[in-house]
Length: 227
Image (cartoon, rainbow, N blue to C red; front, side, top):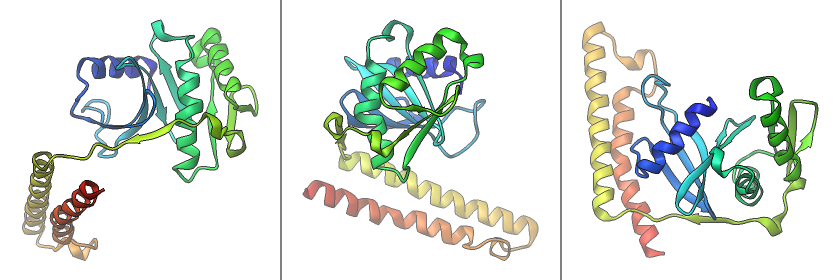
């Protein structure tokens, strides 16, 4: 994903904090973990991209795109060289990636030819200062031994949902289940074959499982409110 698009994304989130294709949760001081679905034209995938959003005084000033085997970070120009990225990476993002996922290390690549000499030197300086070790000119790695637990500021901010909000999501879930059943009927009637002959579970079985999740969601809310 290009720097230009990520900057556009941050500007959009600053204008519309409740942007419909972004679901986020606070995981530390000034850092949110976000799942973002790109609009048609960028990707038609149902799988979201994972971002760490960096804030300052409630404004989004930077983002780190998690690409599993690489990280792509961007800070808005007027907020650069103020330590926002280094603090977010060292205190929240890298601890999250190495403590809360199955990764034992985090690799990054910094390509001088792609980003230019100035950006290359700036990114390299940030990476080395927070504990990345250089493998070669382009590749660096941060391993578990580089974590400093005294620097951790992981702090989850799970807010839950009101009954009205939960009922809305459950209603959406039932619409999806109905849609799956309709698609199953159309495909099977059109081709005279049951989907289950080609793939298990059947689409109807999947729809039933989706519909049943409403009871799971209710249990989750009950346990959350109880605590």
